Image (cartoon, rainbow, N blue to C red):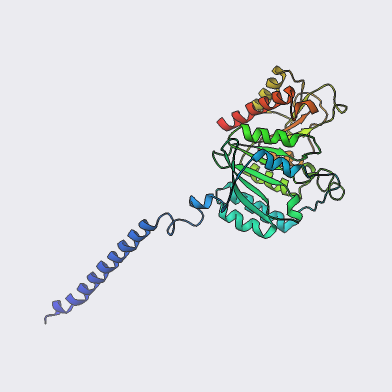
Length: 327
């Protein structure tokens, strides 16, 4: 055999090997395409099934929330989550907001919290609820309700349910009547527990603060609902401010105008000296740091709960939420 023939065999074998390898690569590529989006997609991108919690219930949303808050008393139990629990809670809420409900469930389960997909019998709207799965400290940490039917555009926050009477009812109304929202609800009366431990509007060591912070990190604007006694401020029906910030975006100024048009007397914290402006509110301070929109709303008794003034407050606030949803 000539020298040229002596070099033929290695070349032929190399060609065969390359061809076989190419075919194998094409074969595995085809398998990957068939298995998409389950086996070959990035682990960081949840599939459609991951977005749905395992637990699902058909409920009367209003009754579910108000039955929970009806148990709150000034002498009730309350122990805030410790540092490790808050960190895990924040990660779980963050994963839920990012669309990975299954990972949220895994993170929250060890601290006594679960995620449930709720369908409201009154409206047909769906929400993902973060709530305690049993008795214990986590039962008093509060709840989070997040829209499952639309892009998340706003949050309503109720730090003092029952203590600021009917603010929990106002929060539920906003959630029910406006798509695209989240409701962050404290889990105890403001005076529960020791000292001021349950005053979550002024505490950073709460589940409430951790949930609000995750929303703010994602740029979700929020309105925080408070109530004052008639004797505290009898000149106004509503006191609006932007917490630690000293200015107001256009939609917040428009909210003040809308409430006044509906007959409510409004004090604007960004242009006048008002009591109860919420400048020491810790969620407001974080919003300023993160450049997130935060509206602190103090309402007189008649402007929350039931009645014409409350209807006007809901109508005005709903206009604000609609503006945020359209942005």
